[in-house]
Length: 365
Image 1 (tube, helix red, strand yellow):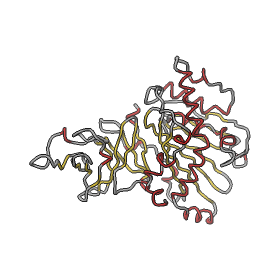
Image 2 (cartoon, one colour; image 1 turned 60 degrees about the horizontal axis):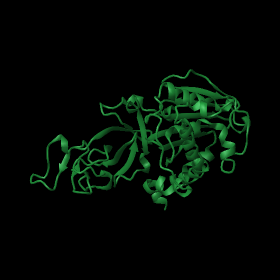
Image 3 (cartoon, helix red, strand yellow; image 1 turned 135 degrees about the horizontal axis):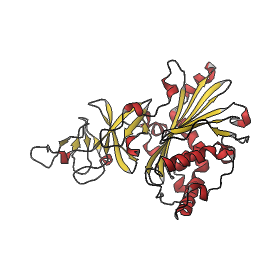
């Protein structure tokens, strides 16, 4: 079940503990806030039980409660309503007055949420980057996130597809083409699949690249080159039909102390700005391509019937679509629904898709 999995919703370093934050996960509006009394992040449904307005439009009180901005109802970290200004006793001890909470946990600097209502998924199932758990591993992570105007499955297809890089990102990343001799190294199961790009990026100059897709929304490319090792990690977080949140970690380990030292001096907001340039290379046509794919599949056709993919370069995309059909039920939204169409400037609105709610970038303004 999609609701039995864990999903990252934010890097904790990009959250402002002084105010509540609205996120959407699997179609559910949620509010993330810092409970200073427990020294822990909390995640509630973003709805006040009184008049159903969003709690994210409220504030965190000096006493550490989440206060609704409409009538001042205030909630503790366990969801209990501690303050109702409009009743004589000042509070109301009934479950109907409580906020709905979700299980959450912080791992590797990410806030993960279990969206299920029946006790949540076991924390041992949180999808982590195993390399970051290595003692003395010296891995350095460049982290960025952004809300994107297309479906989580479109994002996952895009990052599985290495052959688009020298064309889409020819000016910003690479203009080198090369053999795309991709092959699966495992069967496609409900847990995902793995593969190997034998030649690897930059026409083989960096060596082979391995890929692991861990269901439902975790991807890791690994490259071990002569002077460094790198991981490209993507969580394609399903927000709602036609919208997703990209959680991206570009993880590096250098064999030289100089680039390692320089890496550590770069502020988070600079990594965010540089990563947005790459995302915007393909943001418009991925949105429009998703619309056209949905239109052609509306009559019940499968992905392979509307998209012609004769090349070995499409191996991972085909494998992902097979996983989605066999084990993923077509996706958490049943394979239907699109984000509202928009002009190019709206699709590329970096401020509303990231900067407005990123504490790191707000410091850099």
